[in-house]
Image (cartoon, rainbow, N blue to C red; front, side, top):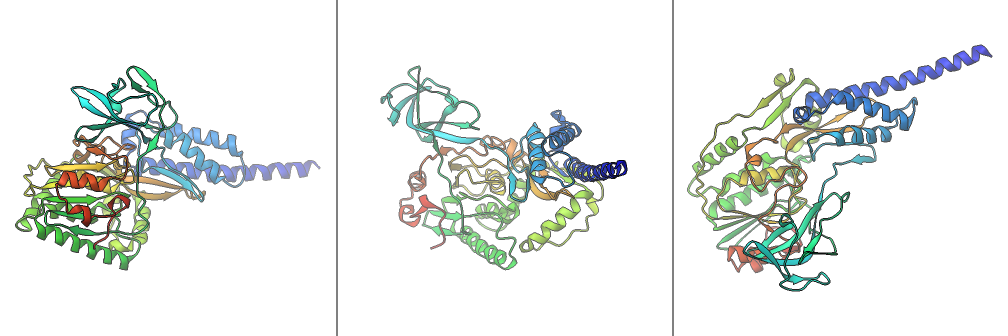
Length: 462
């Protein structure tokens, strides 16, 4: 009897050791790739984040919730990594996520809400012009926080705010009295098909980009989209248009290198020489960008190349990845005088993200640029994301290998509010009235028919 008890005890210890070894291997790998492969590591370290302390807390919480069983409970471990590691990071990164099969955990973003009440500005004060809030009258005075007032038109403003739904909403204060109001969400587009269209009038050109990826997982389709995009760019080069309209609504990103030719083509007035200065300017505003290199990144890069045959990547020799280091872009300032003297309009919504936001940062080199719509997603402080899998649980981590946290193109752009809030538009639209605004701002009445249907989504070529 005693012998049986001893055998059972030894077997239990063996299983516990197995579980411990598997978990410890996963936690060690998590710490390794976070410190060696993640471009945000140094920023979090400077803010006092202790990765070993976070690992210890994951271990402790995991055993409390899952016990010391033979097999790793992937859901519990994923949840622990999300709550006691990722959410504890002091520097927010909208790209950073953890997931296991059927259990994705994404960063909690703040949502923009607005109320159906509009104001006009008289001096430094705001007065009601249009209203659907009970008890409020026309010409009543707004007495709340000016930070919650957003510009819609030349002298039209609306009340809005960001919320994570964990804290109370700011008051709508009119004549020093708080009013109840119905929260509304901004209109946004989900692109269920690839759209790369071009439409023109004598004065204006409209270009739609449903993403910056160009179907990279399909080599044949990627080539077709690439050719279509080149034709659209050729139309832009030939036209010498007064107004260039770029529709990035619903564009969740991809590879910004695919769409850099658009930034250059806008400046094409006389010859291709006009585009060379754009290249130099883009490189100069990439100053402050940092890229991580380490041996642990090699398998993730190889897997990325395999999953994106459309890009036609050749496997690098990985010489620069043999040692762990960070390269910083220190390109000198380049004074850029645009040849393009027209107006540039960019249409955005809260699904405009990542590489599309980097595109906006580069388009901002032009003098007369107007963003119309809502704030973008806000996930461009870190980029060039690679996937890493914990060896035993196969939990997936998405880690950025490139930091744009201090890149001039974002840090010196007053419209950029950081990850989680994105680019603020110059004119906020809280309903589908994009076409009316474009006709107004471009003074091109022919857009009314040429861009019919714009309020409902991106337009294909006609």
